Image (cartoon, rainbow, N blue to C red; front, side):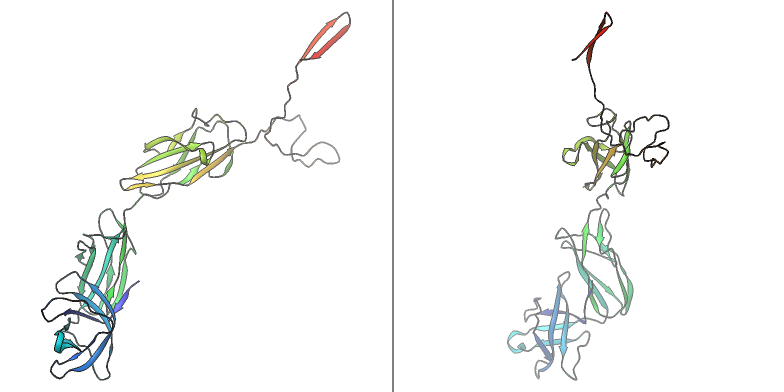
Length: 314
């Protein structure tokens, strides 16, 4: 968000050295018959040139004004010789562009470049209408740009820079949370969310058990047949997987996706159906397969002799 100031100046002491301007400083003119003109109420320093470039707001005395290209002296001028010099009526737009808290040099914005501290200062004719868009190869910025419309004040806009890490992969197959995966599902696949050049594939029985099964692959699919916890599957088992996206700037961790295989759907006798609703005729039955194995294996020893049959559970 822009911060606006009405005035721009340099400020120096009696030796001609640039010094900071402070809120509450009082200025007037001329030094030999000094009259109060204004009191400084807000200050922004941007040390990108010689002398100091300072934006400021002020409370102006009734009947007085702050004019461009004019010198004003501090209230204590007789002892300090401090002089504030206003700039021309051109508009100046300034700010700092940082990456992880440090200034980023070499960013182009409004036909100028940031210095070693990430600071920039652009001068435009007043009123100014245009767009400030910071650019540097390999970086993205927040905000991406700032629009100015008939700007007549001095504006300050800072930007945060970051390298463009890839976005998370999207659109998994099987779909996240799917419960109809067949026992012979051979592959998992996904789509690039944006900016990835390769992928790391993690797969396992659950989220806590994810294991790296493919590193730095360029393809957007992976065969799970024959790997640990891979296909062919049993009925009603769950699996988890994750795809991390990679490019030259780093790695973006993907979301964890899961799927569950189908339930057992046993063959039914002719005329018998599941969830058919039954009916008075007794031609149907109702029920929902659970996928659980309810088959019981019975072993018996059977012996037949002289019209007699013996059997014993074993």
